[in-house]
Amino acid sequence: MVPMDRSWQPVALCRGNRSHLFFPPSKSERKDERERREIRAKAVCTVCSVRGDCLDFAMEIKEPYGIWGGLTESERRQVVARAAV
Image 1 (cartoon, rainbow, N blue to C red):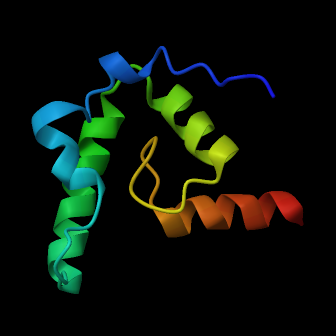
Image 2 (cartoon, rainbow, N blue to C red):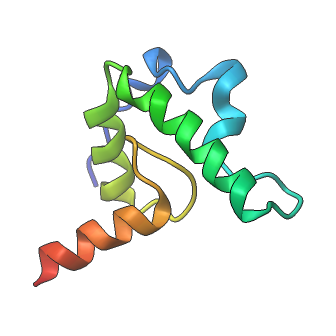
């Protein structure tokens, strides 16, 4: 098994103070709160220089949680389903 390249992670804009935007809180979250959080997270992804690496990583490891590379869990599942057709 070849270890995956994670050299992009230290420069990802989601690190640090913004990380809470990319994963749901431990308490329940209303739909409108989730939508606002996801919009804010995706805005960060839009300007992140390692967005593609991040998405590739999430797709490779089949990450089930959070926003990675600008896509939510369900959006990543849709990409996989479309590719399977």
